[in-house]
Amino acid sequence: MVRTSRVSDDRSGIDTDSVRLSVDGRNVTRNTEITDKRIRYRDELDRGNHTAELVVRDKAGNVTRTAWSFWVV
Image 1 (tube, rainbow, N blue to C red):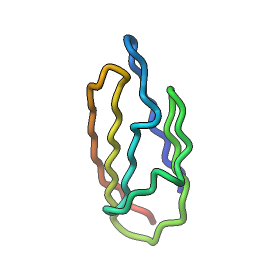
Image 2 (cartoon, rainbow, N blue to C red):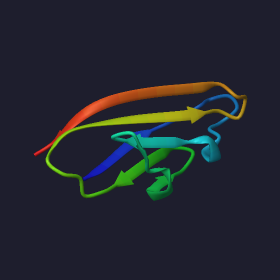
Image 3 (cartoon, helix red, strand yellow):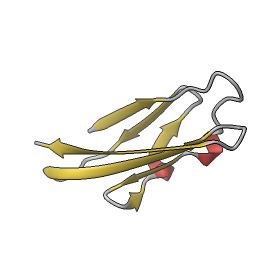
Image 4 (tube, rainbow, N blue to C red):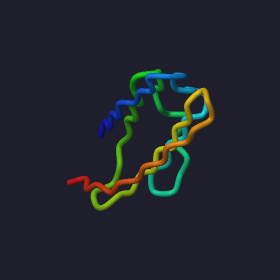
């Protein structure tokens, strides 16, 4: 499974060191490819329902947090 999220900030820019990704409550940031435009995570997940949460901060200190659920079939 590969999940890609696009990120952008047209003012101060994304603080790539601040990005945190959790899948099923487990921090997987270390296994995530992070640039100032894209966040990509690849893993072999078990079948079923999963949850993810992404936290991104810009260089001005503003934080955005988003969460979603998805199924692996």
